[in-house]
Length: 383
Image (cartoon, rainbow, N blue to C red; front, top):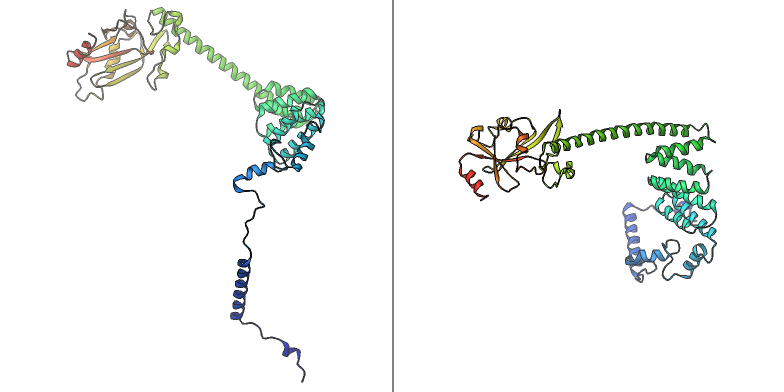
């Protein structure tokens, strides 16, 4: 009796048999791999010298210095050796390198390529103009607008009708606020591109910016002139009153830098004129408490006493021992001695006293309680 096709069919694998077979195949693969000869891969670049090896490769080398393989040397000679290439060929090769990097947005490398091409100094104006223009484009992408303008104008000196170079020169000039230069380049372009909307918009914007810049410059100059006039008026007022300034040999040696307060945060309180009256920053020192009071603008025609009345009682004087009737004011004179002042006098009169010398642009006075040990100690320190 013959076997039928149905009899030749094998029974399907169970899930357990399938899993067992897979595990057996995995184990056999592991055994095969482990039986192979273990050999370290030596064809790649060593980890500690990969940059060095990369630089030797003809496609990655950064320079042609050092010992090169025959292939690398051949490629270098073929493309960059001045003995194997004319100046025009060298410039063209460097330009192509620059273009390749520019296309891949490696603008700094592109600049290096164009620069090497420029250094060749070939006598072809066309290629030189192209090198300068392309370098300008790379500089523009890096927002080096001054360099972009310079290179664009060099390209134009070689090829005055280079429209791309002139447009980039206009845009670069606008970016750095050289509006006259921008307008000049735009107007030359508009001679042949009379209906270019972008050019018209750029030149109009440059003219508007120029007007604003000139207006702001006029305001600035006017403000500076006014400030200088005020400074001169302050110095003249001080000289006319005969006030002596420390570190000034004579009236010609006085300037406002020697009148700036040295107290932190008091620079804005420098002596100034209001209605012909000098207003001074004044410092009152209290040695007993190691405290100070700062008066920002004390008029020269007002008694110092009026200012002190606004200070007392002082917040640091918990016992309220300091008052107008109980204090004395002193200054250290040019003779290195203490001088008692009368607070009922105007500040201006005190500043004109024989031995008073203004230091650091700030009249300063020591405030002490009458007849106290601290006052005696202060006076004895000068003996």
